[in-house]
Length: 121
Image (tube, rainbow, N blue to C red; front, side, top):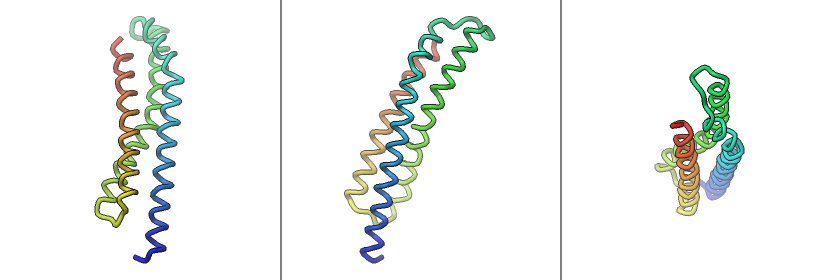
């Protein structure tokens, strides 16, 4: 592989990492925006099938949608890491990918903990 191709691949990798971090942050913002309504709805949930139960389910579904964006970004970052393990990649690119995976994984974990807390009500 020539130096130009290597540089272009590194640039494409960094661009994709940045895009996936942006997607994860968008998912986190959506999740955080919907969280208070889901917490309120879950705090006042009634019997299964009641209006308050339906409202809580809808609020939790909105949380799941926001979390889905973050999960997708995390999944793709992990796939990139697996695919890149056999590829000629610079140490800096691997470090950037690993840092992105760590950041997004922390967001996914926080979202899951909050969703679990709400779902237990």
